[in-house]
Image (tube, rainbow, N blue to C red):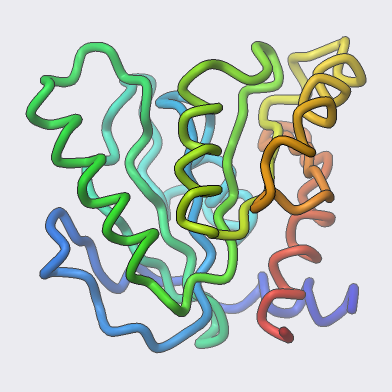
Amino acid sequence: MGKAATHLFRQECRFVAGAAVPERLPPPTLPEVAFIGRSNVGKSSLINTLVNRKDLARTSKTPGRTQQLNFFNLGEQLMLVDLPGYGYAKASKTAVAEWNRLISYYLRQRAILKRVCVLVDSRHGLKDSDREMMQMLDVHAVSYQIVLTKIDKQKQLATIIEGVEAVRMEHPAMVPDLLACSSVNGKGIEEAREALYALTQA
């Protein structure tokens, strides 16, 4: 599987659609993996690193830049979906409500969705907003996987991992395998590619 996963993530990855309202969601044509997390968790950086691109998903030091669902076609085998971040305090209540409505609709209606990667900043561990998202995914029975980001900046990673593992039994939709990655030094990226490639074979 190693060579196959590497081959997939060397394929062309292109932006195909952006949806700010449910009516604009593209037709479901490929298995989908969605990425979600608190604003500034490193979501766009992780997507870019996975597909060996620097500018596919827009990165910014300003939280809340992703304000729609962005769909990226990876080698005609897998669709990567960048979801708006949550926990962004400076966004208006109206904007947050619209994002939440869109995300909830997508999670409930997208039968082709194979997995949601819930990104958690390893420097901080699980926050209340992360737990709320996990509960939403449990309610919708959407399979999700915790992905710790920015592990190059966390020297007590084992403690953070233990904290996530401690609550796993409370979340029936969470898959047992936790991923830990760094977009800076590449640690854990190959393991993440392997996990995502496996979803195209299911």
